[in-house]
Each structure stands twice: as C-alpha cells, then as structure tokens.
Length: 97
Image (cartoon, rainbow, N blue to C red; front, top):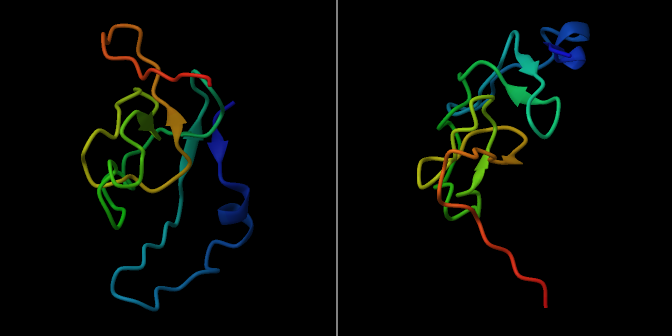
C-alpha cells in the first residue's frame, strides 16, 4: 500500500532548515516492496547522508524499491532493508555461533 508520510500530511510546515545541510521534504512517497512497506519510490534522499555506507555497515542494504544496494556510496537517508536481488551472485553470508 503506497502512501504519503502521515506526519508530513498533518504538519507540512513543521520543520524549517536551521543549518546549511538540513533537508526539508514537502512531500515524500513510500512504496511496498519485498520486505516491507517503506521503500523509497523517489530518489531525492539517495546519497545524501553524512558518511560512506560501508562505514555505516550498510553495504548490503537498501532504501530503494529497485533493490539497489548501498555498496560503498554515500549512505542514503531513510529506513534500510537488506537488499534482496536473486539475480545477484553476491549474497551476504551470516553465521550462527
């Protein structure tokens, strides 16, 4: 179920930028995907974070509906899911000890 963030709908002018690097969104749309309902269907927050995705341990994660991994780019802003793309041969391996 795609939709707009209810907080932004109720308080569209709630946040005002106070610093040079602040980001204020007037509208934003989420879309359902493979692992949940909060994938970003727009890309205005891609590569807008403050550090490298690898340094944030987000290499195999994504915020994007198309399942593009963060890899070693600047981290995307938003909730991250594990990227699931069966066409990729590189799959993160986890061990249980």
